[in-house]
Image (cartoon, rainbow, N blue to C red; front, top):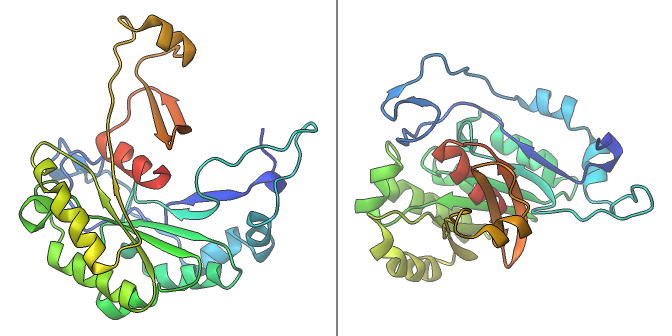
Length: 256
């Protein structure tokens, strides 16, 4: 079991609140009605400081401590990732104050968001050293809204521009569906023109283990389904068992 002193990265859900109504999100009952049983809660700045102390923040940027004589490898992003699996980062009241607190301790921060809430001045405050914001933009204005329902494409672009113009680092995260694949080139070009630090798209590969038994054995697949995330040939995450679509999208955005 990992000891507290061995932690080098944190993945945090600041809130369960979200403005979006993505069809396959666990927040929505059968992809439409909001699930009234879904708990509404979030971390305040005071809560966060109580849990993530200056001592813990300092630890996140320290070299890995040997475990049984071996130095473990940290997979994925090192520092703090504010996820978007349960709610959107910008829905949290103290979101920017929390990021500023973390940045004061020189800890890298990665944020996943739909980017539709708040105003440009709010997003410009996130132009801090070591902070990267990943905006979920799944196409141009006519296709983005089909999955990222109740978000405003034009406001997202405006907010990303505000961050970039203030000197911040933004990533355009594009999840391909049948309805938006044809716009990937246009999105990539627009991301470059607007000054996004990076454009990321996701590819999904399905493997039939019955027809590829040797590969399944090499990958040590024991249960179905087994899900894996790779980046540049390196495995970043794996888990057996079913996951809802929005959780998978959040995981991909987090690790890729």
